[in-house]
Every structure is written in C-alpha cells, then in structure tokens.
Length: 139
Ligand code: CTP
Image 1 (cartoon, rainbow, N blue to C red):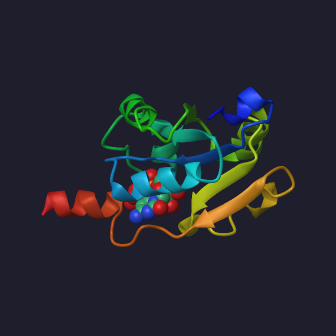
Image 2: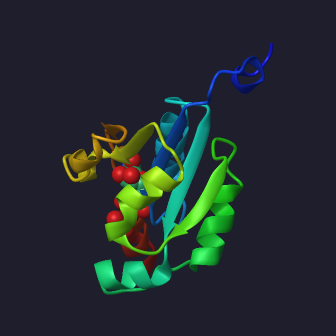
C-alpha cells in the first residue's frame, strides 16, 4: 500500500512535549496514542535547565540521554530539545503541526493554541509517574 505522502496527501503532524525522565510505561502509552492521531510524531523533550526552573531539580537522565531514548521509540519521527515553556506557539508553527497532544494533567493549559492546531488532552496512564519511581527507588 502506498504511503499518504506518495499519493500527494499531506501527512498529519502531531506534536507532544515532556520531560520523559526515567522512561516508563505511561510515557510509552502517550507517545503511542499521540501517534495514532497522525502519520508524523514530533516530540519536544524539555531541557535540563528548563526542568530545573520548573521543578527545582535536574532530571536523573540528561537531556541528551532522554532525547536519545525518545528518538529510539518506533512511534516517534522527530525529536528536539524544548528550551522554553513560552515557545510552544513558535514550535507548533515552526514544525507546521496539525495536532498538539498532552496528558490531561495539562488540561486547558494549551487551549490558547487552538487557533493554530487542534489541542487534545489524553487521560494519563494510572498509577505511574517519574516522581513515584524516584520515591520507590529511594525506599
Ligand atoms: N504521562 C501520562 N501518563 C503517566 C505519566 C505521564 O500520560 N502516567 C504523560 C504526561 O501527561 C505528559 C508526558 O507523559 O504528557 C510526559 O510527562 P512527564 O512529566 O515527563 O512524566 P511524569 O511521569 O508525569 O513525570 P513527573 O512525575 O516528574 O511529573
């Protein structure tokens, strides 16, 4: 079967953002489900300094390690480092995205981008997060 772009149809481009530290099953699920909304998935992996600014701690894995892990996921087509939370609109325009997908812990936060793309919030995978994993490992 021919791929959509071979037929002259434009691929739907989906974008999502996150830290993706200590990559876990919830991360895999959001990437898999995000990709189901289109044919090309772009992921903005937040930089180490952005995480420090947000959470007052550096991620366990460096941004290079986190980027390499996300790049190796079969649902993902392109990865970049997200340097600032304020640049979401610019990234969406730059990468010509059709759909922004985020977990529903972000519900409502990106509604202001609905003038340039669809914005979809997906339910989080229950009972797992990087923070929980760090706490479990510490015990
Ligand atoms: N995510 C999800 N289900 C989970 C955990 C995360 O769908 N159980 C989604 C988030 O909603 C976000 C993306 O995965 O869209 C990246 O989330 P991230 O903040 O990197 O992961 P968390 O595990 O939530 O990290 P933390 O505990 O540090 O907040």
